[in-house]
Image (cartoon, rainbow, N blue to C red; front, side, top):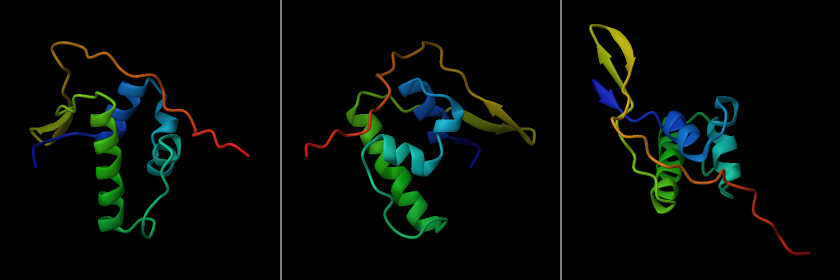
Length: 96
């Protein structure tokens, strides 16, 4: 792969949250989701990342390639037109 979407970057930019709030378990928690499967399992991590991506799309995010490799160097891909983000996700409120 020479181009990809770094979901942590997309999540942070879209929901306007700092990088320390873009760990997989924190992103899921803020979106009101539980981690499905075994932590650090490549397949389970991928499925959970896909769930986050689906939620972001539902919230109006336009996912775009934001990283690429060029001459062996990791490069950030900037978008030509900045997209408006959504408000940061809040923990679901439960009634007692």
